Length: 372
Image (cartoon, rainbow, N blue to C red; front, top):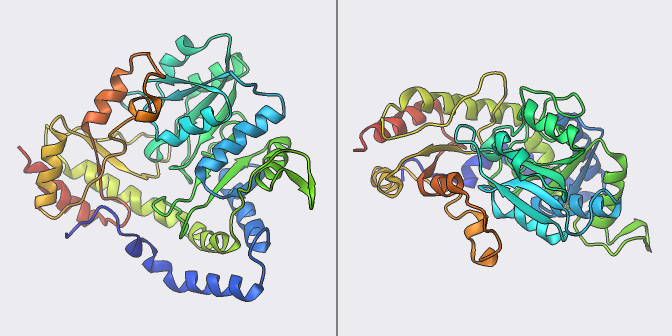
């Protein structure tokens, strides 16, 4: 295959020597948990997201779970409270809400952004609504003045699923007056799954927030519920990040701007070169910084398009073919109609973006243009 969708060996090749040095540094240190590597990574993440704090954890799902559990411990959320979330997200967003005994309220996305449609939020609010989970899907910030105004007027917690958008900037300042994703709301979860823009060599995640109580509570919950050694104030979990993953991520985080710029150039090349009227391209928005975790196009004959590209040496993927409300584990759980979510699930195609040059994108675009 000339243009595979993603090969992690290619993603990590530019940093191979630095990653090996980082691994050796941790091995030689003799300290493998809760050490200097995780502390340094937390400082770096807080700087990127412009938050007061960051907490490294085991993965992105656990980051979300810990945020919800911590807000329950702090009395800001209670079992049965409703959390509004877009319906076309990855299932982890919904799993984390249910895990905490909360009720997810699914809302359709905007056709232009693929993110939560802010015009539909108000009608989804009930007397039980206590939070909004905004998902920065595909690397586009899910934030605008309407979401901010609704959250402030209804005194709602805003939690960010920032699994796909580290380094992105919203065009509207967040609740704390800053623009980077991860710092727009009250707390945010980050995933460092190996396929992410900043990917670990295994599972890893983080929480970012300027809420000191939230971070302290989540930190305790993530370490068996302990605030100090052998002193357990909560019935907690084991959700810590390994020192070796933190060391790897410190290497990758240093190159975040370069990674974001490379993806932006590839996205712009796709945008300019794809001219087939059967294809709907994602929008490039002025005033915000998208980081293009995925470059997602739409086609009514999606499966035929994918086969056409495969026959010509181009790998593709679908993010996501089956939305959460249609998964077997949630059969019969959600009854409200979600027409945009289901339409997108039938039409979306993710093109290679992680290691694609602008000339690669132009070549793939020409193949797309020959699809009939």
